[in-house]
Image 1 (tube, rainbow, N blue to C red):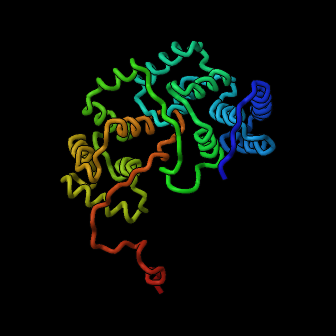
Image 2 (image 1 turned 180 degrees about the vertical axis):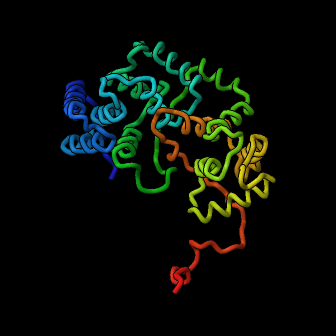
Image 3 (image 1 turned 45 degrees about the horizontal axis):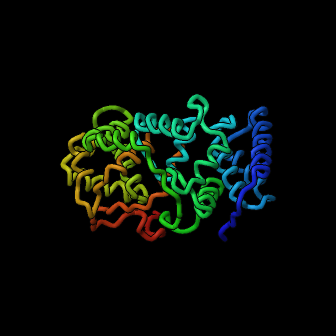
Amino acid sequence: SELSASTPTSHTSQATADNISASADSADEAGQLSDEGLRNEVIQWGAGLESTRDNLIATIFRWLDGRSAGHWSSTELRSFAEILGFFCLAEEWAVEFKEVCSEEGWDEEIGPNQCQVALLVSQKDGHAFCSDQSLNSIVRLLLLDGVSGSPSDLVLASWRPRKRTKVIIDQKPRQELIVELFAALDFDQDAHLDFDELRRYVELSGFSGNGDEWLVEYAKLCAEYKCQVKEGMNLEEFAKLVESSPSNDYLENNRLREFIATITSAAPNFSTLRARAWATRPTKCKLRSQEDRRSLIRV
């Protein structure tokens, strides 16, 4: 059921931050703080609290404050921006972080504290306003590893980049984005995307098939784009795939940025929130995974 939120009070906010920080600090000292451990700590802490807007903000802040520093670093704020749907390249985020710190009056060296983040998400005409519903959704996402239903059912706010950042984003040629995405996927740096490297791309694009299905899809992609199965796709062939039919695999520039950020960013991956679908190539062969289990057992 949907959590309810009410108007926050500064007393509740401070108590919230103190409770979580004390729990996290003790775990830090014991060398036991992990993502799973932090999730359990926050869930246990939150179980006895009323879900006010103030407490929801505190939960999000503490969960993303991986260093337990009481401030969000540039990387931690970038994680939050990505939850709100803003994906960009490293150099673009550097500009955005500098701009938001200047605009909000934050210390760029240490980043925003919890009260400053609360103000950021509470300005209805601002760049990162979050409704109570959005805050509820984010908490459920972070603590419960997602929500029931399809990704498009998750209602989130939007992070709107500052003017200077948007100018830089708009000036980036599309071809450069494709080159950067190719380089990010090419883990062995052999100038080709092989079986495993190309699979990462199609999975980001929405492909969710098993090993058998990917084997067939990969073979058909190689045949369609006339590339060697062993080597995989070179940059020219990959660019053709990215620029293919809008009804199939065509990617807008913001989605290219999302993919690059997902692969290269130190921030957690929140790209699975975005609904998408990869259109597989038609095939007449029957996959092993589609066979009756008994027919696969040799007597």
